[in-house]
Image (cartoon, rainbow over the protein chains, first blue to last red):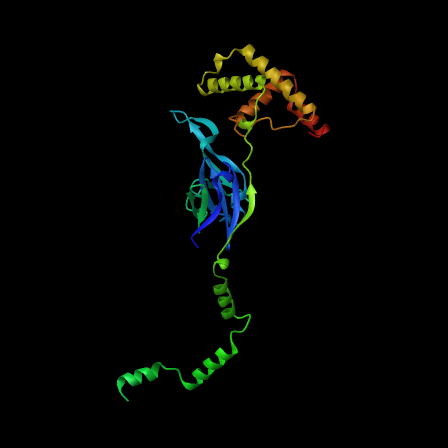
Length: 121
Length: 162
């Protein structure tokens, strides 16, 4: 199908999401820290609207040099989004499931030509 | 018959197929068939290409950092960051006990006052570094400080439906 026009970049605020349909595909387009990402909106778990759940920071455990735990913290750089049905959590930048990297959402390329945003299907 | 003539005759449809073809041309394409749909798609050309349909717009989640803070709240956040740093550096002793008691007392009263006025909120934010053990240590110490047993807490929670 090629490049499909989505919208102008200035219409798409940082942190915003758009759920679009192109043909038979339902796609979630994210703008995160100025970058665009697009994934299939069908969760690989049970087909829930994967791209419409909470956007949350990754939970990570920080260790001291002697490997004792300082506790659990929210990551300051890695973000995930969670399917609202059963909480399957996906990496914002790759679409991979955060616990099992073999599981991933279908990723679509997003092109920015000037101010126009396109999804390549 | 030469070999080339035999090849042409082998490729050529027989009389019955020719008749069927002529009848089909004369009859035209029947509506509702796949052939009719293909012709329709070809006629529509560009219009039949998939369109991008916007289903939903989900605005950015509001971040607490984007809200303006009262001066007192900003000062409290700065103090909290200092305390967190002291704990992370494994040097909690650098904060005077009297200061800790004053802060704990003020925060207890502040939280209870909010709760009494119906201003309910999670006592810890999502970004908290408090562990379950930290919470139990503090809860136990608070109960002891006001001479309460866990049983009495459970009784009060049950009576007040909290």
